[in-house]
Length: 87
Image (cartoon, rainbow, N blue to C red):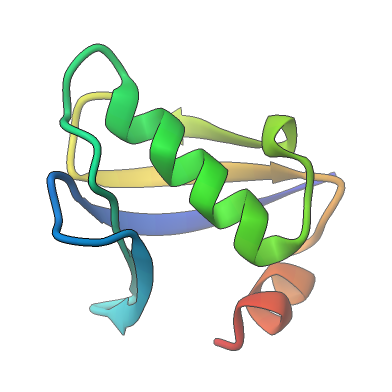
């Protein structure tokens, strides 16, 4: 079982935060640049921390090089993810 979460990534932001929902996507701001997967790793780490889940449980399922991504969260369903993120 894995939940899927649509996110919009803002790389090179002033601070790292989950900035709420816009257009049906979770807006995630990270300070890392979008180079060599650094922003993807930062997004996964930040979302995992917000969910109280291990870092390895959050991966990029689609959109490796795009701003709009789909994250896969292992061992959680969509409802649990939304509840933990307060959506």
